[in-house]
Length: 107
Image 1 (tube, rainbow, N blue to C red):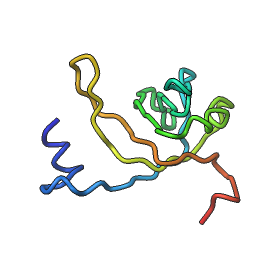
Image 2 (cartoon, rainbow, N blue to C red):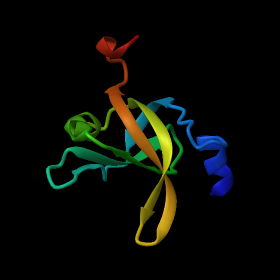
Image 3 (cartoon, rainbow, N blue to C red):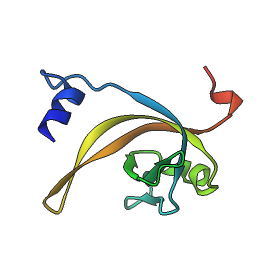
């Protein structure tokens, strides 16, 4: 975990590269979370790969209808650590998600 953290954060700990991936989908267990459901918790699949990637999107709870449809989406994210009940794991920290093929979101 420390080696991965060094790659992600860099030596100074200040670097937070933002990644982008397309063709993503939720495994069906995604849900809004938080007392006011303003955050989004997903288990992301990519392509035909059955491996899921834990993801959290703070302030993205309103995007739940987009992933609930089961259609592919694209996401911008950083990689971070999740500390929960004494266990540390990697998770995707979602910055934004958009439906694949959304012409209004193309740059």
